[in-house]
Length: 216
Ligand code: ADP
Ligand code: MG
Image (cartoon, rainbow, N blue to C red; front, side, top):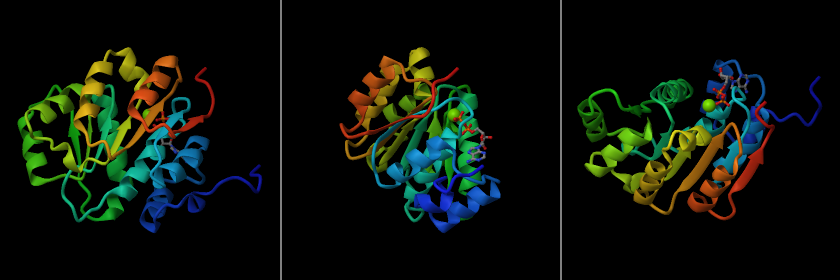
């Protein structure tokens, strides 16, 4: 079944620790969105990635994020925004799983519907990566508990749903607070004009556009 050109995880530029994590997860070969996005993200490019639900977008952005984290620096270096708490929890869980072999990686959920104080305290102690919903992330940025200065990597997951749910203005406010010297990745199951506009306003002009197949 596999033509010789089928990409392997080994050919994408991932570290040995992350290749081990991929093996432990039981992934035999990268999905198309992973094969297209992982090398570009590892090279520091902005990416807008579209592929249907269930096609492995979490690992497509998650593995390069984990590889970019400097574990010696206990400050928030990457932020993933998701439209719902459930999705944020799911993404955080998957990132912790992939990062289990990275030694001391901390992934914090910043979602609403629960007290902000433990989140604030965790931020004070120092975390590497935050996964949250736009409202709560915005709160933490506004009250100064989340320092944007060390944030170099932003991912908007399920960007189409975030826009549908009316988070566009929140997302824009959050992005304005981040350093301009950052990598921005945008992932989505669909590619409506609104995503194209979002890419144009938030990403670098040379952002790689990956479209795998339309949502059916
Ligand atoms: P999406 O975000 O595109 O909806 P997910 O990242 O949630 O998709 O992945 C869907 C499922 O596929 C998850 O259970 C995930 O563990 C699994 N998966 C991801 N990548 C691979 C792969 N390369 N090989 C096998 N399973 C994979
Ligand atoms: Mg997803």
